[in-house]
Image 1 (cartoon, helix red, strand yellow):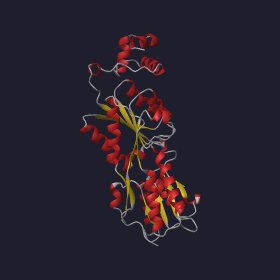
Image 2 (cartoon, one colour):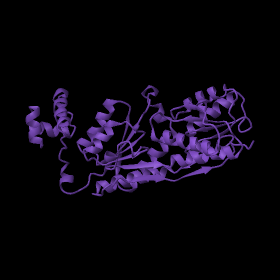
Image 3 (cartoon, one colour):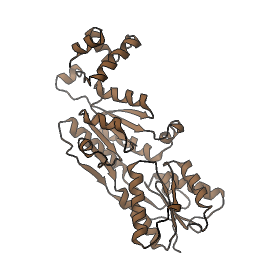
Length: 345
């Protein structure tokens, strides 16, 4: 399939196809939609610009942040310290490698269409997806067509034949959660609540698995009544903490699946004059910068987001330059950072 055939199928001239591909403004919207529909139907990958045809690499990479809860109107992204650090690390590392970054927030089907058009018209040579759930069929379809993709926080076993054609970068979520829960148990806590992250995210599943295994290995009861669904946001941590404090008997410790939710919990405790760590010991995950400035400072699990970003970008650039992903999964080590928010009982 070439642009001449696309033009014939769409009933337009070849120059019109070229103007659509290059996003010129002088193409009627109905004509543009008709051409793009044919391009999508036949999986047409347009010829790159003259620079690319001359052997030069298009040095642009897409960074796609998937907003899991569209009802938050983007606040999940804009208010996330984790995403802010990760995004800035991606942009900084790309700049150091002489690549520019096109950033897009995806919260629905139209956003996916706009994002994928950047691949189809070769505005970008590859992309990094952050925040994808395990059931993101759109991303799997993109990978299957041969586009260069890295995913941060993804289950490689969800669809191994597809994901082995991409680069996957995960923190060692299981180990981090296991060590955090084990530390609380070693401090004498036997009723430990867990506030989980977003549904169907791999990090949520792995952190829950680590928590459960530490409880089991200590000979304690895995009580589902101590599990609360959050979504990695400050507000979800606040509301989960409200529910936890109503339990009888109360837990003595809480493991939050990220620092933002832990800070939501701290806010609730502060408003209701609950003392940390005297009344509750708490642990977060991520070690965002604010964690060490809280009062008390937050015990948490550190994942190095710069290494996460570098690993994803290195993988994409390697594929752009002809390398094969070979199904490699990059697991980034984590460390338990002990501060003031836990107390031995």
